[in-house]
Amino acid sequence: MFARDHMARSVRHFRIPDVEFDHDPRVPALAEAVCEQQVVRLDVGGERSEFWPIRLLYKHAQRALKGDKEKSALQCDWGRIKISSKRFERGLD
Image (tube, rainbow, N blue to C red):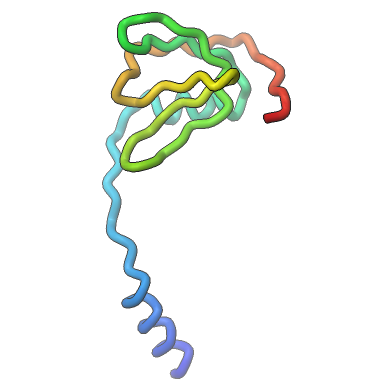
């Protein structure tokens, strides 16, 4: 009984609000490209850019794709994406 009470108290103290994610179909595709080290061509602000994606971030209610050489793009700037079958070698970062 003690453990159950302690757990109920903890839940009240550390309540995490429900977060609603948008259902952008590009996100799972980009996440897979990060895992598989696939080259991505992404329209960012009307310009085509090639990324070697190393991270897909979620910060301050916004996603961002981070590439090599300090290249990044916020989700609100993403246009069309093309994920290549071409892979890249990830260096140490």
